[in-house]
Length: 276
Image 1 (tube, one colour):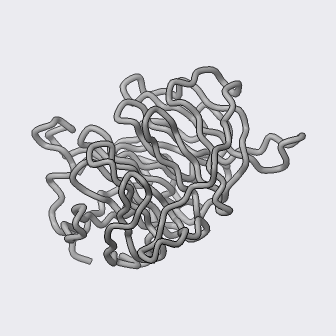
Image 2: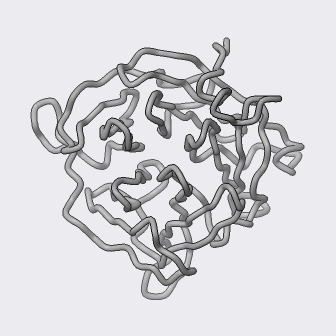
């Protein structure tokens, strides 16, 4: 696999840290923690809209409620980017939004995935949610399991995932029409560690594309980690945060080495088993 840095530290268009990512198959949307102060408070968030073809942020939203780092769930569905707060509050903004800090999110009725018993799933337990636009199903990561829900949010199935790979713990989730990717993180780990499953829960592979300090542009790795992963057009994009020296994020792309990310050789179909 080939890892390239797409956006350098502090070049994401809005000052802050990227904690989660999603896509509508055209743009990538980042959930970014910001520090605007004033009436919004010392911490808030924004949705940044990134064009991977132009390799730049083309818009970002007005500040909205900050939902935290660990349980940062964002997904796209039917022309909207959704963000779920740990208290169940659902915020959304049209994927067509433009401008820098002017487009405002709207609040909609609480997000309600239903458990196998028909009870509301506690949003505070959701580490990440992905919506499959093809099958119209949700995949949600809680602790060390992934649950599948239909378009109405009704429970369909669940399966266990690896709680850790090496020293990294399950933290994020993304997907595409065929696969679900669980992302792992820990401070000081700079490789985008992933385990891959199909939508029935069958394990496909452990994958760890190699990131380096040369690619990152820093000689030390202690004060950084991988925060988000998102699958798009056969490639996987991931972001990192750094909290020493520069409080910013950087953006990376994983492709098949020598083959690019064409439809014939997507990363997702060339994931050899990685032994730890």
